[in-house]
Image (cartoon, rainbow, N blue to C red):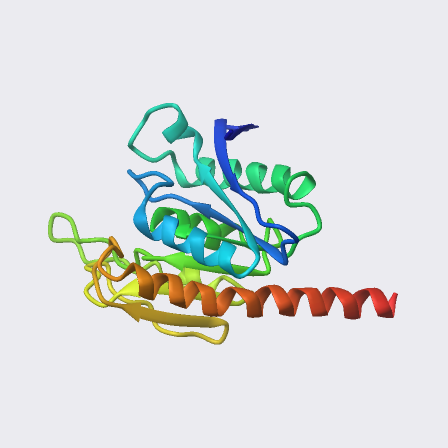
Length: 215
């Protein structure tokens, strides 16, 4: 059964997908008008579980309330932090935690990675440059990606109308056949996630072990 969690901006809903003896956890958010059943989220969930990573899919309060228009960014971020803190104190306690999501959910995960102490960020179809409106130039959101200090994987469609982010010092970019929906080659989406996640979780475990040995 889904878990409902109270946040500063309403009730969020979490769908947990457990594994035996998890090596880490992945918390994913949905796109602006979609839900946690988006094909790329489902493919990523299955990929993560196949390599021993538990998954939590989070529905933001505005979606739980039945609204399609997203809440303001500050509300989304605050609700997300409340959910992740709740999971870290309970169902996902003591696990290296990777956060992420598709499109809007990826942006939330990037902005809050430091606040929730994520060990990595997974971005599915990051909306780099929204379409221009009324002749105004497109505004890049690259600063949100660049602000993430932990390892980041961006899985992006080769024909995404929002553009393709560049690689960075902590950022890998995997391009797959398709557009912003990432529906055309779900096997490629899953393969990219499956290859990246274990390395991030393993690195965090090793750093924690080193930290405890020093203490």
